[in-house]
Image 1 (spheres, rainbow, N blue to C red):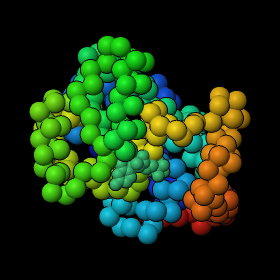
Image 2: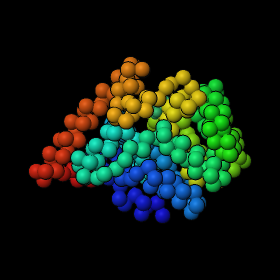
Image 3: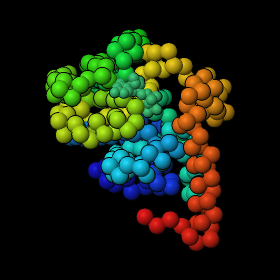
Image 4: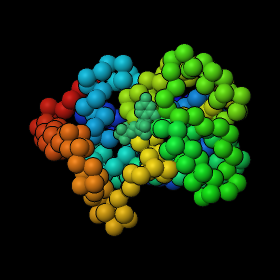
Length: 258
Ligand code: UDP
């Protein structure tokens, strides 16, 4: 089923993105829940990932096989526009978790939160329960589970009969966790990798105010509030340069072949 979903996927340099709007993305999650018989991977695709997958063939394969790759930020939206003239919408993973919770609340799907520190994880469950009073939070676990304790965590997830699992271990840890454990998940049909999102829901990390997001400057807000992110964000101009280079290459018939 999801193989056909992947056929419209756009390749942006070395990563892929699904050309969809937020509404279409949630529709796709609904179809995974309704028809799926296995866990479906929902990951965020952004300029940073373009560089991490090139250094790690396993991660490259994991992304190529994901069921849904969200356009997580303006970088992918502009790149898709420039390279394919595609009109896609930003679907940040940190916001999409709310869409999934809303769907879960309305349709009675059970969610499990795995990742972040114990305090942040617990607080996030409280915040979500308050925001979505009918949401069935089937279980939660912090992200510092040892390898020895992992079988017990998997058992707990299965016993909870969660339909949706949010994994907040940061990238690439969460994507690798998915691949290693997906076959052991008996009931879960959707796994969203949400990176540091629980830190914004139940912790002290603040998301950019609406006005910054509206003007596509969330990356700048994050940089100003967490200057140590400069290491990660310095790749943005390189990404932009490479996209322009790919566009120029396409125009003179030197398009990348993969
Ligand atoms: N984390 C975790 N277990 C680990 C390593 C990290 O639960 O073994 C959590 C960490 O507490 C933080 C998140 O993973 O909440 C990583 O956040 P970051 O912003 O670095 O992730 P990104 O969104 O950039 O992938």
